[in-house]
Amino acid sequence: MGICTSSTSAIQTTIVRCHGIYCWRGNGYSWVWAHGFIWFYLSMWETFNKYSVHFYYMIPEIDLYDGVKEELKFFTTSGVRVKLLINLNREGMTVNQLRSEFGYRTSTLLPVLAELKSKGLIQQEDRCYDVTPFGKLISSKLIDFIETLSMFKTQEQFWKSHETYVIPELFFRNIGSLVRSQIVEASPADLFEVHRYFLKLVEGCSVINGVSPFLHPELPRIFKIFIEHEAAVRLVVTSSVLELIRERHAEVLQHVGDMSNFSLRVIEEDVGVAFTVTEKTLSLGFFRPDGTYDYNADLVSGDPAAIEWGNALFEYYWHRSADVTLQDTD
Image (cartoon, rainbow, N blue to C red; front, side, top):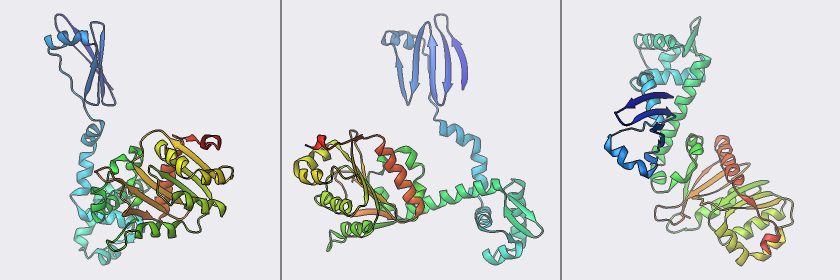
C-alpha cells in the first residue's frame, strides 16, 4: 500500500493505494478509483476539473510482473534450462544421462546446471543432479504452465468457439487441471454421438453431480434411472429450468423427491456452463457466442485432477444454490 499527498491553493488530496484500488480525500470529500471507474460526489465535479487532479489505476498483476520479469526471462530465453529442470523434477540424473537423454554436449550442460544450482533450483550429490524442494515447486508450476498452453493449442478451436469466460475466475486460474482431457464431437451423420458417449461415461457410477442451465428432454428420465439404482445424485438447475421440470416432469419429481439419495437445488444466478462429474469422469460443455448451447461438443476427462476440479466447481455452485423441497414441486 502506498500513500502520497498533493495540494493546490484550494484543495489538498491524500491518495492511498491498496491492491490496485486508489482512494483519496480532498477538502472533506472522498473518491474511489476501482476497476477503471471514478466514484465521487457529483457536487465535486467542477472542483475536480478545475484543479486538474489526475489519478491512475494500476493492475496488481502488472506490478507483480515488473518484480519477476527477470526470472521469467531466465526460463523463456533458454530451452535447455527448462528441459533440464523439468527432467530433474522427474528423477535425478548424471551429466552422462542428461547428455544421452537430450543429445547436448557436456560443454552445453555444465554451465546450465551451474546456473540452475546458483538459483537454488537443483542440487548435486556426488555425480547426480536433482531438484531442491524449491526447485520442485518452481518446476511443477512451470510444467503446469506448459501443459496448459499445450492444451489450448491442441484444443484451440474448442476454447475459441465457446463462451468459456463464464467459468468462475478461481477455477479458470486452475484450468490446467483439464490438460489430460479430450474433446468429444458429434459428426454430421451422427448428431447424438456426444449424448451417447455421455451415457456410457455415467453408466454404473455411484456418485453423479450435475449442473444444468438448460433442460435436456431425457435428463429427468436418465437421472430417475440412476436414482432408482441407488446412485447418489445431486443436481443444480437454474430457476427457469426448474420451472420447466415442474411443468413437464412433475411425476418424476414426485417419484424421486422423497428418496434419500437424491438432492435438487436451484440457483438464481445465470450459469453459463453445463457439466456432470462422477467418481470416474468429468463431462463439460459450454454455450456458443450466439447464446445457443453446443450439444455437439463436450470436454471429457477421466484424469483425477480434472475430476477434483469438477467436484470443486460443483461445490461452488451447490453452495450458491438453495434446496428444492417436495412441497416446492407440488
